[in-house]
Image (tube, rainbow, N blue to C red):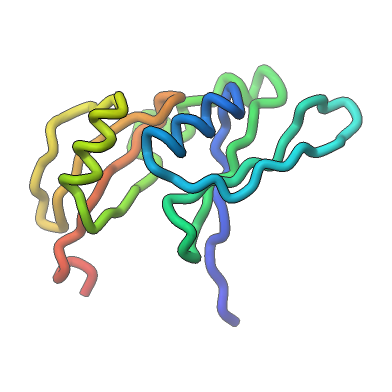
Amino acid sequence: MASHLGALTLLVADYDAAIAFFTQSLGFTLLEDTLLDEPGKPGKRWVMVAPSTQPGCALLLARAANAEQASHIGKQGGGRVFLFLETQDFWGDYERMRAAGVHFCEQPRQESYGTVVVFEDISGNRWDLLARHADSRD
């Protein structure tokens, strides 16, 4: 059986602000933005973004529906790096994201597996921007 991870849910406070951050600051593609007509859930939307239009994992941006969910916005990784954005153009993406106002938590560094820097998304979740060394995947 061929399987793949299709999407991850990321809690957000506001759909439009999250869409703007992911598309404008990170360069993601908006794959879908559909209003869901659900009783008792006004304004609920199905919003999917991804780093590109290539097959792979996308993010489902889900507006917090209650206080418990809202308390987890920006804390989905428990303070650790939660998601990994891999790139083949580390310095180009790093500079473009910096110019767009993305908050980086440190300076880029070289590790045995590649070049990496930690940044935060619009909600404060921590991500790695990562360019793996070609031989680190073997």
